[in-house]
Length: 222
Image (tube, rainbow, N blue to C red):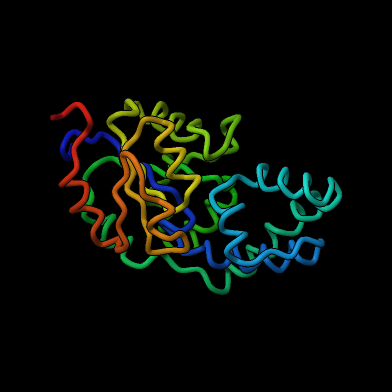
């Protein structure tokens, strides 16, 4: 362990793979076509880090069930096409992963199929194979703490010995609600001031992640 940490839990989109920008662009176009024009900033605020089921519920409340069903049917395929053409790993994350000695896992709002695809496209899947958890496995997605607590339980590590690496407002809220320390990556789409708060360290370069793990300690470690 580093400073008492037993597990580093990584979000996927925007933390491991640079997919958030792609997803926002696809959502802006698709939701506008369905009758709800949103800016990129509004999509980030409403949708980023939420599960597909949660986003569909938001769309249904605004546009109705038929529009939500259309979004569900089209979003995954349109995102996959864009991912196949553009996706890369988040800058610096491979170097960071190479230097982290604490056990790691992934806990993402995405489905397992999506996670296999995006992590596979960026060469990261084998680093986490067998330690990948999806919001489809729990009843409530982020900002509820269920997914992170589920991942910790499956990995056999108490919540207070877990560090979550997140990049979204809802993800950071979920980490706090789970009783876990959060390292909030502000090098993506969400501004640092939207991530900052109790039990949270904000940073903007993934290469700094191993050093941050060296500096911070579990709450009861003194």
